[in-house]
Image (cartoon, rainbow, N blue to C red; front, side, top):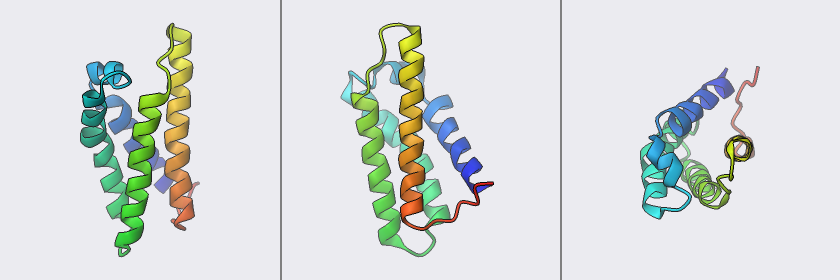
Length: 116
């Protein structure tokens, strides 16, 4: 159940709540990327951090930093795609990488996610 909630948080804040002009320009405009990271990514990482890392400030900060920085690097460096098929493919790769790092770091810190 916990894993499902994390996926929903990520989907809502990285996909739904992200304004279209930010999504389209964050690969070319550093300011747009920073707006996305601080307005969307920080929110869901903060919620997850406070919810799952109760009591360990160092682990919480490390988890947050790894995911914040990697999210920014992925969004900045992955290509947009030149046509709709490429855009869909790169978006899927983008989301898979974000979630793999998110769940990988949670696993590293021994957070039990009750996957099923």
